[in-house]
Amino acid sequence: MASQAQDLVRVLPDEDADERRTPDGLSEETLRNLYETQVLARTFDEKAISLHRQGRIGTYAPMQGQEAAQVGAATALREADILFPTYRDHAMFLTRGLQLAEIVHHLMGRGNYIDRQDPADLRTFPITIPIATQLPHAVGVAMAAAYKGDDAVAMASLGDGATSEGDFHEACNIAGVFDAPTVFFCQNNGYAISVPRERQTASATIAQKADAYGFEGVRVDGNDVLAVYDVVSEAIERARDDGGPTLIEAVTYRRGPHTTTDDPDVYRDEDERADWEDPLERTRAYLEATVDWSEGDERALRERARDRVQAAVEAAAAESDPEPETMFDHVYAADHPRYRQQRRELPEDPYASH
Ligand SMILES: Cc1ncc(C[n+]2csc(CCOP(=O)(O)OP(=O)(O)O)c2C)c(N)n1
Ligand SMILES: [Mg+2]
Image (cartoon, rainbow, N blue to C red; front, side, top):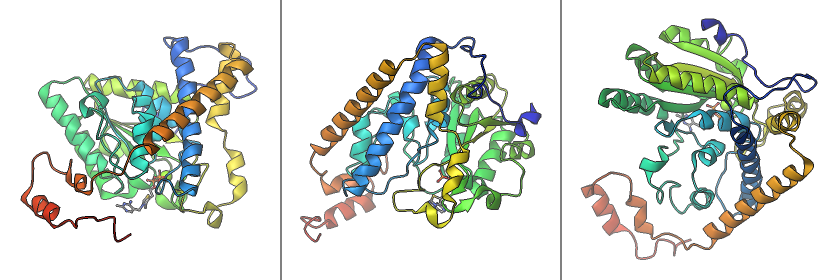
């Protein structure tokens, strides 16, 4: 299996291949869902960028190009498993069942997207902005689950840039030593803001870093939703069966800017994007060839996605701003004297000065 750290695992055929089949054990419904969620995610992403341009949400990290990696990986999670996402993982959130309106509510700066949903149901941790800090948390939770005899596997999402952080090393090291049931899912999207993958590490691949920690490393085509689904499913099974952690490198491409406040034309060639397949087009071609996906199906799906996104935006926009003192909620499980004091010191109307 160590050789998979160098090879690229693919399942979806090339566009011109004539042999197309539905993979064993994957229902037609799952196949359709894998595409439908990608389209919903893309529709949401485009809307979020436009909301930012209108000044209605804060900075947003687009995921265009990474939908297959995110949807494939999150679909492979079982209900018991626990996701540790990053700020770019909105397609994972949607797959995981987070309400669209809650995501918009969060982006409007009105609370955390999991505040009003039961974390025990979602099995999804809040996003972390400090790069790689979610990785030791994921390993800790995985170890706790193993210790308690729970069936849960922790999957931590990370970027290529995160592999340069000390937290990445510490998390992988301890996960390897203790065989913690963890899957490290790295979306290698080619860049950490403006820093290209070649300047991030001298390793030939990111997946091969797993060798040093004594566990499996797998490199997968991140724009091939079926390959990602397969590889992550296998890694989760292995972790659950006490086979130890896996580091998965999903090779993909960030088609848009790092965030809505970034201009990638400053540091990368515009033509570069043309070298990368659009994962949605690739999945759609496959559905057309295997389950008779029609123009009508496509139109209906896109309309449904637009309606859902629009309804979520309207629902979130209809809410009023939160009470300022709610900023102290959810910081600690129990009340804390310092926060009690800060709450008392809040001005009558903190919005007044703006
Ligand atoms: C500890 C830390 N250092 C620096 C930053 C600033 N920063 C935000 S995103 C980012 C790049 C991360 O790149 P990558 O891990 O490849 O994820 P991507 O943004 O490409 O999804 C950096 C350096 C940060 N948030 N946290
Ligand atoms: Mg990156």
